[in-house]
Image 1 (cartoon, rainbow, N blue to C red):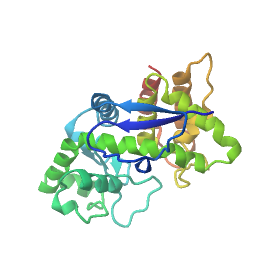
Image 2: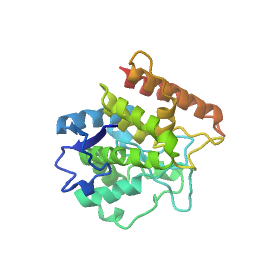
Image 3: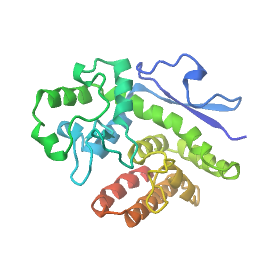
Length: 266
């Protein structure tokens, strides 16, 4: 029987009172993977180092060549009003999570869209009081952001499997659990889902091919028990294919992406 792995964040920030609160239901053959507060913090710091080099000024950025700002340790996307991008927008969901767990500045309550229409407008206001409050919020809620990222992973596998024919589900599920029980595996899964998504959104496709967790799991070829090497190599291949298929030049990101996924095999 395939073992079901349960991810529990012991942060004191995500109250879990019943199995119904979790994305992965229990089974008679369940194994708990528990993240202590320290382990979750370490993973959060690694993600923040990957996304923003661990620098406070990179908590709120609008990257050149992109149509949206990226915020927090996970560089959560926030679309301006009237813009519909191909990538999953994650910052509004983070805001909803933070409103439950911490004080959010008044101007962010009831706000759905990023209040800047362009990168130029964003940086023209980079020293405004709103930017100061936003940067402060992203800095003081790092533990809550880690919890939010982990919750996304908890929900990822059921969503991924639901998109597949029954005959393909077993292999992907097995690959997921092989990674989950490997050294560095939980970090790799959490980081990649935050980094490039689940791989199930039809809008996140170039030439019909995705680049998320699903595609990485499908591409894994484990040799001599080297699970994390297989995961890292598959992620590299998926991201390389994305750049090749992209409608505009994304090659400047590839070296950094490769360095990031190589850390999964270490």
